[in-house]
Length: 123
Image (cartoon, rainbow, N blue to C red; front, side, top):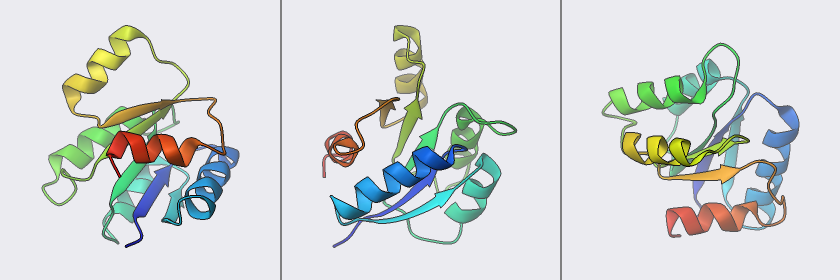
């Protein structure tokens, strides 16, 4: 069965590259959102197998979006993989402590990013 993934990132190029990789190589269904606010609206409209979430976004950053997802019983169980350019060891600890499923560091290889997602989610 095809996986249904929501990609939330404010950069159009990143959304496009991730969407193409996940759809073309993995055969998953992908929807995108260009902001945290849009992502939170879209997450309510479907059944999601995972969310790929950018950390650094204007207005509502990835941590704020993640906190809101965790606060809602309907979205709390959706695995979240962070997309971020900045990962320090302290960040990795923080991500693990708050319950993020995994982290993909930018820049990533567009041809293999789907495989990274599959490995993190054990698909």
